[in-house]
Length: 244
Ligand code: ZN
Image 1: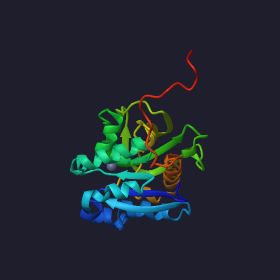
Image 2: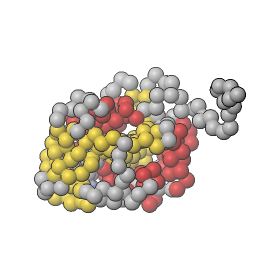
Image 3: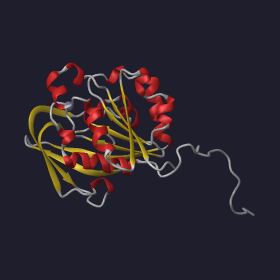
Image 4: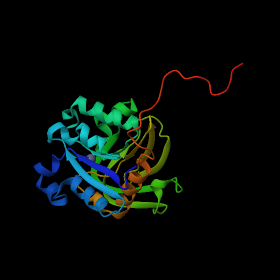
């Protein structure tokens, strides 16, 4: 095990380059904002990667050095090469943690891991979101109260077409009346996956301290507790006890 948890923050990084209002909120990109607050944690080592880098910045080498991958995407899910998706998929099954943020619900990697459409209902009018913490003993709920509020958000509503989460930690209510499973934990192979809904690009959501707390908690929850280099040992085996 490494002393520090190695986190790679991946962002498609298109909105921030093409829209001045979004660039004003995230001058160093959404990945830059996330890397900045995670980088203040002494136990984490942060790097970033973006879509337009070679192999989207997710080479075999980079993934081999990644314990937890954070993924933000929206506009360009289809531009992510299948070979890179397969690479990330294999790494998750081997034990890498994966945190899927906001509109990355429609990313190739999340859909592949879930096996469902991952569709949802949505509305973008800047309404309030109240995020309810429904598993207060869960590591991802550490340091949160009963709920927290995001003043302006994009509404994501049910039905969210995902498998029932292994653990549902957060449920959001929106001013317009909908509810949404906004903090979902999954296990796939040896990897842990957390989907976290807040994070629409036109609001400064990743600067909010409760949102940052959830992401920091999720990184620590999702980090592998074993060496990712160890291959799973499968195949035929002799019995441990004499069978007579
Ligand atoms: Zn959005």
